[in-house]
Length: 87
Image (tube, rainbow, N blue to C red; front, side, top):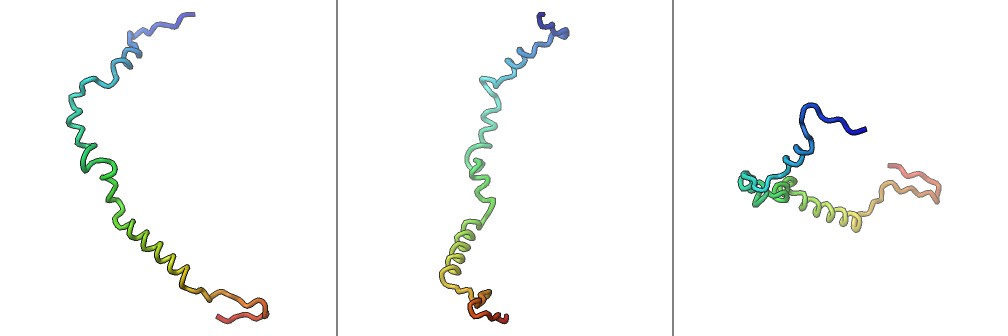
């Protein structure tokens, strides 16, 4: 059986073919500023978290210092002698 004809005369294939991107967009030069210079994606999000870089470095140095130099003598029980430490 042959496909039925659209009674309204509307052809979806012709619409899809004509709705593509135009060859000469008259608004292209007006839209160009949105994606260049200070409005690039990198520049827009560069200042989103000010101080995050220096804070990360400072925290890493602090964690390294604490691991290397600070002795944690709290929470250690002498189980060999069988006695409890008082806190």
